[in-house]
Length: 285
Image (tube, rainbow, N blue to C red; front, side):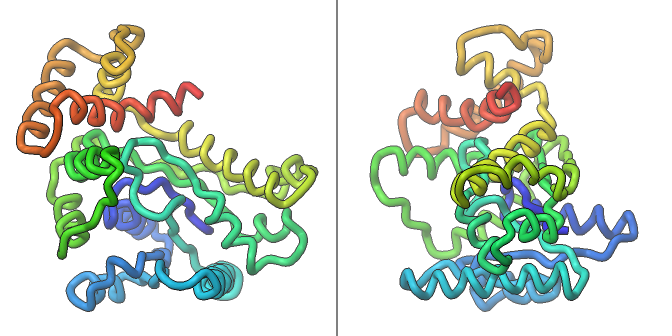
């Protein structure tokens, strides 16, 4: 299978999949890993031990196109010829605002190694939309801080060692309930209607929407998601989904996080609430 997954944590999204596969006596998958994370130290060694292969992120337009072609061909080779699964994130970089969106560029890349038959090209990849849900978002305060600084229209520049810090924080930070859901494999039958669309771009957009819908449907909502939705929308439509204690605890959690962050407290608080409310909004869609 090609597991196309929402991306909430650098390491745990793919690591938890491997634990489940091993527990259920399936072979573990190969894992894509951004070249920006390979620092020729611990992470590189860790990646090699766990069947991770590097996805290069930098280069000229021509170099990036060649990289995409090679990556596409390798993924297809692993699935069809090696009969091994692959995990890949639905987008470059983790979701910073709780809004899981598959990049059309990912599917365009996958299509580079297929033949001219759209339906055959994607059905033979055995795509499985994969949804991971964390009650408490890994690195939520780091994501909110980055979103805040980016909102000031300044280019966010990572500090040395920031990626490694995010990996370790994501692993160590308490996350409450964790849920992983496997969508149904996307078969030729699922692609029949998409294949009738006028051109390749429309087909790619429709398949992207289908994957997003599967990820949204399978997202496991927790009480704090409903709290965030009600607070950000100034409503109480989901009041039956949480208690006053759960609401108070979540607000205290946010206040504890933002008091040590850079920026206006109200803006930071709204960004926090948006991060946790967006899964509800997408589920409603």
